[in-house]
Image 1 (cartoon, rainbow, N blue to C red):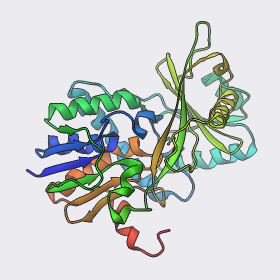
Image 2 (cartoon, rainbow, N blue to C red; image 1 turned 30 degrees about the vertical axis):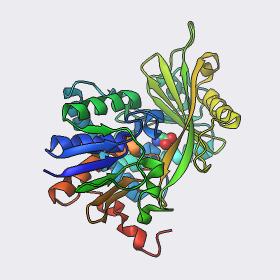
Image 3 (cartoon, helix red, strand yellow; image 1 turned 90 degrees about the vertical axis):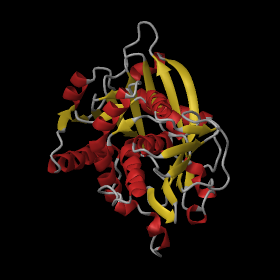
Length: 357
Ligand code: GLY
């Protein structure tokens, strides 16, 4: 049994803490506000590595796919601890407004077919048949297998599971790695302050997110995640049942600023209105901004930094998706086993390589 300190009580820290405690280790989580407050509290919750992937991010895609395979088992183990994390298999619809978007969807469809994933290219009319509330779209791509998770239920479920396994919580901000046999650094955008190797390698990447509710008489939210690129900006609408819609997310560098800007809200609402015009009559119930933990190359840092210190950070847009594989990597490290498939590429050892910019 190892005495493990986890710095960070977001989805990565709590997943690592739960899995390590379940494996028999003695775990303490350090966070002023565990299961609240960080980027995980504001996440969209899409578990969709392919439709989220950007060109040139093949290692990110492989790691995302490896973690996605773990998600159904991870969610059912978590539900057995007492609180269901709200996993939904409602799929994704990506919509195209012009010929450039449509070309991108053709490439995405080809890639999905090549890896054996079901994906259907749809005409504009077929897209509207699938999601009658969609705007004037030229065509669509339906990916029925994509998953999504309710980020707030997930955090509650992880917290409850940690408590079940006697994880201790120290509700304080930590400035230096705590004294313990093993330490996992999972403090999101703040992790760069905790270890010299991560200084400058993890930075905050701001994202604004909105939550809306349909008012009486409004068209209900889409039944699946809908994504698009509007005016060059990616946008997603993720339904939380038929009562709430999460709309995200802006993405820009603003240091540790967490103010919600009028411009951010306007861009999100304008984009969403094109995708799903009925949104203009919805009630806007929450506006918030969070800080993703960005790495230099979009791939997270998962691996040993020093003797007894392990990085689990820099997950960029992919924290929820990559939580199961990251937690498995932490447990493998504690048990002296090799890391799970796909994790090697995310080793922080690449920080020492000159070409890592
Ligand atoms: N994964 C969605 C986002 O970072 O906005």
